[in-house]
Amino acid sequence: MYVETLEQSGTSSLHDHEEQSGTSSLHEHVEQSGTSSLHDHEEQSGISSLHDHEEQSGTSSLHDHEEQSGTSSLYEHVEQSGTSSLHDHEEQSGTSSLYEHEEQSGTSSLHDHVETLEQSGTSSLHDHKEQSGTSSLHDHVETLEQSGTSSLYEHEEQSGTSSLHDHVEQSGTSSLHDHVEQSGTSSLHDHEEQSGTSSLHDHEEQSGTSSLHDHVEQSGTSSLHDHEEQSGTSSLHDHVEQSGTSSLHDHVEQSGTSSLHDHEEQSGTSSLHDHEEQSGTSSLHDHVEQSGTSSLHDHEEQSGTSSLHDHEEQSGTSSLHDHEEQSGTSSLHSDGSCSDTVYSLRNSTFSR
Image 1 (tube, one colour):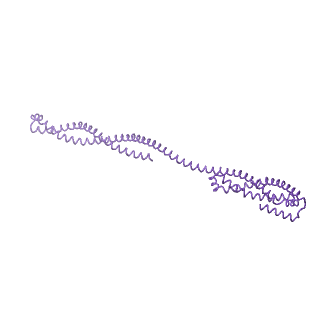
Image 2 (tube, one colour):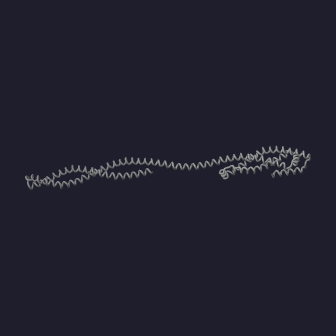
Image 3 (tube, helix red, strand yellow):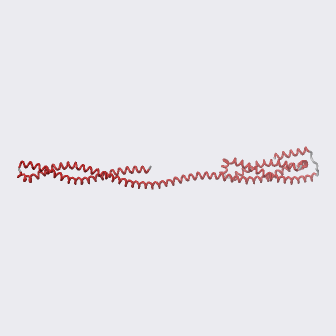
């Protein structure tokens, strides 16, 4: 579009310049060539017309003079007066006829010459326009293309760099945000599983063993001895597995969840913690409770039951042995007292 505008404006300005310069040069050329050709034509046509006029006018005047003055004196008169009168007549009539002839013949020849010059000048001017206008326009277009290409290239570098920088900031931020969410969640989840499992395991060993040991000591060696003699060690072992595991499981869920939450607040970063609170805290917490509780439950059943069973056998046997040596009696309580003791033991275990 810009090149077409330049072609139109360049062609119009070139056409105006050619009309002004071509007209003036053509006018000067016509004046010079027309004057010279007119002068040559006047010399050729004027001489011939003057010669014909002299023959016609000279013969008629000579015939009239011969009738008036005679033939003898005519020759002398012709020499004296004929030359001057002929010269005057030639000047008057020859000039007017020559002027009229020049106007008619010179105008027509000049008009023909002007038309020829116009045709040849127009064609040569048209050729000159095409050659000079095309070359100048081509050079101008090349200059514009070079300057336009360089300016366009610089504009593309500036605008492309800024747009690329904005795109990198937007895409890099989003990809970094996604990477932080994925890696941060997985690393936090792994850290919670490792730290939560170890802290829960340590808490179970410390709290579970001591609480069960204290409970056995508080419930009384004598009542346990009477109950063991009536119901047997196997029934006590079943009761401890059912009641102790449930109470220990409830205690682990309450204390383990709080310790995990405290550990997350201390170890996690502020930005990651804020992101977890918005997007993944609830789902991650549910996942930890489900996976951690199930794995903890399996671990409790395997490790806690075996350690509790070993502790009961060791402590129960020693306490029973000591009680038998001190009391020295092997009397057994009635069934009603055994039932009351078992009921009180169950209530105290559940409440703990």
